[in-house]
Image (cartoon, rainbow, N blue to C red; front, side, top):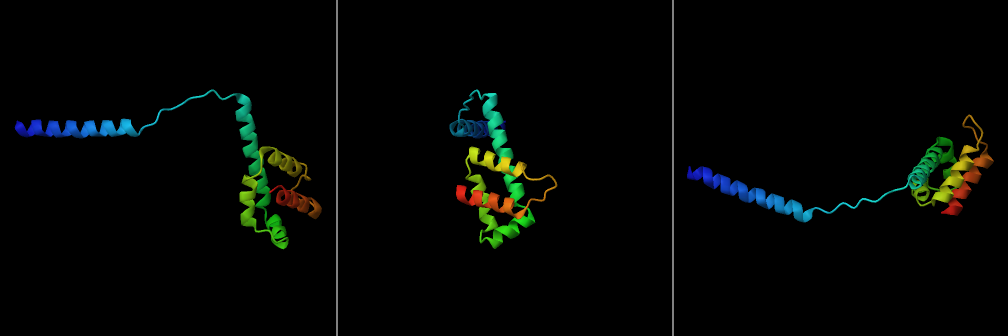
Length: 119
């Protein structure tokens, strides 16, 4: 019987330590109201960056970047550093390219130069 009480006492002590440590290291959650416009703008900015990244990941564009002396690995960081307005402008330029995925060399060069100048 004494073994049972010792076990309960030790278990209670360990449980108390666990509860105390959990309460000391937890942080309070702060909720705020987010308006719909903010969510839409953030979603649109993410879509614009994804469109730019997808366009820059095409093999023809990577070849052209190498010819111009730009490291394609550096481009991803540059796209992330674009402001939302710059990303939107660039995405609109990409969306205005001819349907079918074939853009002329001048358009591809223009997009690449815009990215390089913006960053």
